[in-house]
Length: 330
Length: 275
Image (cartoon, rainbow over all chains, first blue to last red; front, side, top):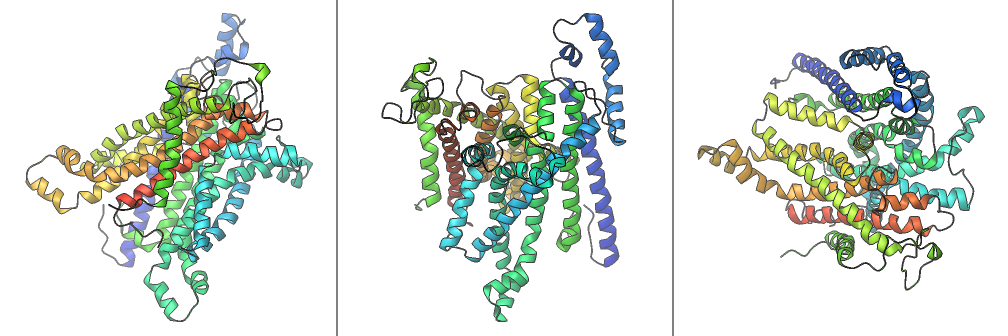
């Protein structure tokens, strides 16, 4: 909205201005998200206290438990208590397990976070070379092969791929276990082994998407004038890609990698079901079915926070990296 | 007339197959799948049962045919929700571009995008009860910001064009310009996006049904068939492979159709893909 007339000072002011505007929308998004999540969970049918005590429970017992859990408080004060608790790192006490939600989330993060990172690593390792290769061979048989493979990769539901992987590598060949997680205390290699099939299942469709983005970003960069100059200087096609094009083409790719990370953290829910992994997704799924509202609220809020934070960081990083964006009004 | 691209041809072919199966299943089904026939269970591929039978003795081909209805119906209506709410929202935001309404619509979009769609879909179906209808709502909600965003972006660039300026000079209101001039020029973008969202809808429906939150038994759905197949994967891998291939071919078909239509409808891109 504010016109920028160039000059270092004005650019600096604009960047600070942009940063604070973006910070404001970041906080606003979090506040709105918390209200939406709280309201959604509140309208869920089923009283947690009655659910915990079973169908034969007396009315006064249920009332006592409701008071103990704080469910008899007005909605506004429960919302404020939840938010202020989350801000200080106290996510409350799980209705079902009677344990600290912060600890439960911490335990589950030890599965979900390595799984997301493992899948992201696999997807990047597959996607970047194939995407670069396809761009370099644009229009030739190699490009066509990569494009066709990525089309199929995108179409494969990851949980179906997971079932097939279990059928081949766990049941038939018995290289990996079919599910479960033995925990990191039994050795890092054991832990990695139990996350391997889930990570492959998660990584494949992501790799297909990333490979296509790598390819198109590189093709676009290769059409720029400075690339023609580099070729005119006598650099070979691969030298040009390596020395000039790749670095610029990586900017959109890095953005997608960032966004994929937050997706993998939250999107592993079905894969965790297939492999019986005690991750965040499975925790929230079980909590929904058990009416453990406080766990549902806290975990969903945490996942939304991760997505909003990644978006925020990506936007700020873009602004710092790409001078053209500083000129645009946002 | 431009020759349709290979993507478009394969796209149409792969999309017509499930559509035809779903349509035929309304008039004729090879076997009755509401009847369980345990003595006929896990029969392998034969002329009578081209895809074999499942663990309840039901014909897999019929299951796939009837399951196609669920997948297509859920994804279709979910895309419809996205278009019917998202497009007017995007056009309205573009008409009031730069205003607080425009900003509000965009921030709303960002907010919906920030939610992990699968988790919220699970939450919605858990709140409202698992059913195909609730799966439609859960998937449809996330289509709204997609259509709002692309129609706003495309409409914004159209608002700068001379023919819109002349319509403004002629005294037409923002609403009339949006309906009469902007919307027809957005159609090609919307059609392409609809095919992409359709394919994502098929995947989402399969995922929700797989964890038991989509179509409920006895209604067959491809996702439910996969859930049933999981425990049988060592005994009869075919039970997992057949519905999986059905999902993959349909999604692949829709993506190819989207690519083909984009090339065919957008003259700027025509011929630039494979030359």
